[in-house]
Every structure is written in C-alpha cells, then in structure tokens.
Length: 289
Image 1 (spheres, rainbow, N blue to C red):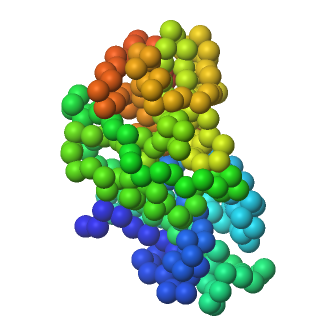
Image 2 (cartoon, rainbow, N blue to C red):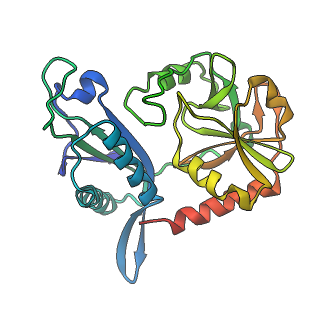
C-alpha cells in the first residue's frame, strides 16, 4: 500500500504536465496541515486541524500572487473526496498537503491572465513519531535564507534554502536546523518556527523580509499570554541564546517540540510550556473542520 494518495484538479492522479509553471519556475505555493478521521454518531467524519486558519492563508497567498482560484467550496469538495478515499484504504490521520501552481504555460515568465491553476491535494498516512529525549537537539545552519520582503511569509514553492540547510547534517539526534540572517539574528527552523522563554516571558523572532509566519506560531502568539506573563516578537541574536531558559519549535504537524540543546546551550522544560503543549493538543482537536 502506498503511504500517500493524490488528487489533481479533482481527479485521482499522481502526474502533472512538464509545462506546469510550478515545475518550470516554482510558480506556486503550498500549505501543510494535519487531517483526522473519526466516528461521529455511526458516521465517518473527516476533518483538518485549524482548517479555517489554513484556508485564510491560502486565500491571502493566492490573492497576493494573482492566482485565479476557484471558490473555496471547490477546495473543500476536493479535500473531502481525497480524505474519503484515504479512509477507505485504511489511512486514519496524517499530513495533508495542498500544492497550488499557476497552471500550464508556455516558455517565458509572463503568464496569461486567464490561466487556470493546478490544484494538488496529497494525503499521507501517519507514521510513528520519535519521542526519545536525545532526539530533541538543534543546530545552527550555515546556509543563509533568501531575503525577499515581497515574498516573505508565503509558503511558495522555492524552498531550496531549506533543502540545502537540511542537507548539512546526517546526525539522527539533531531534530532541527536554525537559520540565521547576516546579522546572526535567528529567523526560524528549516521546517518550523522558533520560540524561547526567559523569566516567564515568551519570545519569538521577527519575520519581516524572510521566513514564514506559521499557523502554530500565529496560534501561540494569540494564546501564549494565557500561559506566560507576556509574548514578545523581537530580534534574537545568536549570542543571546545562552540567556534563555527554554526553547521550542512549532509547525502544524509537530505542534510543539521542546529543544533540550542548541549547539552547546542546554534548556529545560517548564510546567508552563508543558501546559501550553497540552492546550495546543486540545485546541487542535477542537478546531477541526
């Protein structure tokens, strides 16, 4: 059995055209989330954690990039068709990835105004998560993240920064790599957003001309004041890491993972952060639609 199934423009398929602009130019974007299935009143229910937040970002990105998107009802129809098939073949939950390219085009960067997007839905079956304590370590990346204020925050298809950064290590105990800007300020992880704690205050790096404002980052900034004295979005220099007592990383699939060691700096895990993690697990189950 394959560990994924795919739906392209509403049809079960796993191939796209060689003249798709997503392949030619990385002309597209994506969104990754967690899908679940469960029985409700003897009926199978398929849902996606924080779907409305993800959908809002899809709409925002498509508008900014001038994509001819179909109504949101079409995306929901595609999503449900895929998840129903996933459940039928034995999947129960896992990552759901939506890739949207501008569509088919001829040579050249210019695109026709009426070009129709290629909409790809991918559902994966969940895999066991490594929860060994030694696994939660991190390192700084040598690879620098591209700076582009116009594209900052968008999950566009040009992810070579993260690809090259992730190729820097093979140590299975390293969970994540951390990007630095040219001033040695922390930006984010190769697959995550970054948070630190000091004196019961939660800190996360600014995202301005590079990086992604992840859904979990958005949720934690919004809800964090219920667990910490305050939440601050600031520049955090590499040399300041030793001043923090805690560090954790987040994304829509891992939720919240505490980092016990970044290079030579060690961190603890407070009860506040444990409560935040439990709350996020609860909230993710509540915000399923």
